[in-house]
Image (cartoon, rainbow, N blue to C red):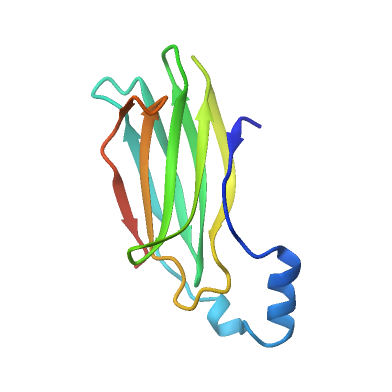
Amino acid sequence: MNHTVRRALATGAAAAAIAAAGGLTTASASTQYSPDTFHICVDQSCTMETNGTITWTNRMASISGEVINRVSGTAMADFGVFAGENSIDGMVVKSASYTTTKFPATAVGDPNLVGGVNIVKIKICSSYTRCSAEHSYYRN
């Protein structure tokens, strides 16, 4: 798999322990939000792009999609995850020259954060030397 994920999350075992202790209820875990789709290019020619879906849950989000690189160099899609103005989590997905890197649904956020994450900011860069504008997606 050609993607790198950086995060500071509770482990699945810790999240299960919280749920077992009554920290999470069925009602809070089943809140439904509209998913967002994204398509972002590094330039007008769309030589590097990322597209996919953000699926929102009560306290976290799940991001899936692909990074397409049609030129030489590394394409990097940078996903910042926020609760208001506070950075909570993030991930970077890279694609080598002339390749498409698909990434499966990856959970981001903090299952213990009351109110949860509500913003995902995305940009795509060519080795961080040339980047798209940052696009923000909001949980609604």
